[in-house]
Length: 65
Image 1: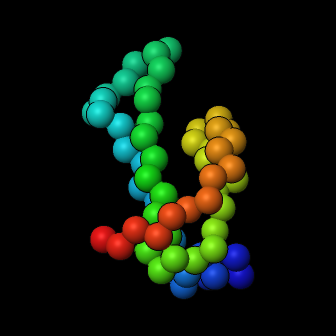
Image 2 (image 1 turned 90 degrees about the vertical axis):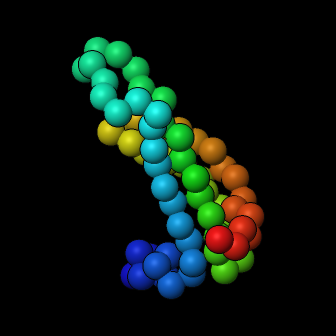
């Protein structure tokens, strides 16, 4: 149900890296973009990628694209 609410509220997330390849023992910087297209009152608490969690606790701003 939470996923359905998120899909209907105009939330958008994208994750990308400037490095197309990585060696297993080296780190990779992953950039994330979070957007509340409809202006939903939402807060991103954390982002987890490959078992690594980054706590951010940031309110999402309304940005129309």
